[in-house]
Length: 383
Image (cartoon, rainbow, N blue to C red; front, side):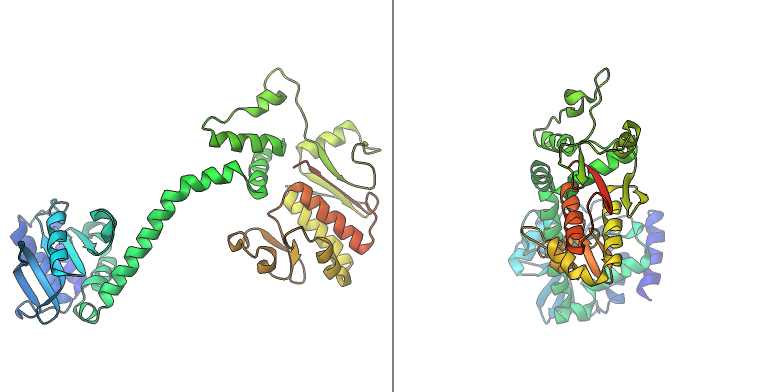
């Protein structure tokens, strides 16, 4: 019988509680599954029931080579699969068996005895037969129990790979809190920008980066303070507004001429407003505005794109280049979601603060001879 058909029948019988004890599981589930996987239970050089290990007996020993155990299988009654793992491990260690299985017919646990850690940490896979499609269950059983794969060592090698993968995942999960702690204690510009963008989208008001930074650093102390209230954003207090970075020829402390208080409030609260050769534009956030203004500059001066890239260079890395590797040489995880094309294959990195975005636009203007404050007007909330 094909394995998939056999598993379908076993699942049906499990649902009706037709397997009363360990003997029923052994004769009506385990042995038929092994036969479907190429094992001959009439050949004592392939399968030995009630195999003596010198320390006890294991229900089935499967031999990859004559009389050399490759897999131990321990059978329990339905609902008792969590019992017997310690005994099975002791047997497997004593005999040097590379793979062992504990099953109650419904639940199949595959273990690598030579792994490290407790029993659960040495389990390379757990198959709950009644919760998986028969095709998936057949694939898993074939991976670890097919006779030819056991004989060739492929099943053992796959078990080792699966164990290493699971160990790496556990280690990664264990380090998540520490990674978060480091991230919020010394947050990168991208994290600050993302929180500020989301806050602006929810409230119509963009918080100063100092507010976001205070919040993130408060998380590491376990009690983030409501810095917005302390700084005057609470009820009954005067609302502070974010400082604006100005790309113009006027001194940083001077006020833009010809702009009403209402226009300034729109810049602070609403979408990013900017102008290019007298035409007004808006973008939903600083990143979109930044990319659009660079595209317009590059399209107007396509022969100067290399000069723009050179002028935009930061202290430690490129911001505009032809490949993501040149922009994020040590952070490829940032590449896919934090770059945008500005002209004919030239990319710009977006994992930067607003102040740096403004500097790059200023550098692009310098490289192309555009007049700041006349040809280009570009303002962002302070970072």
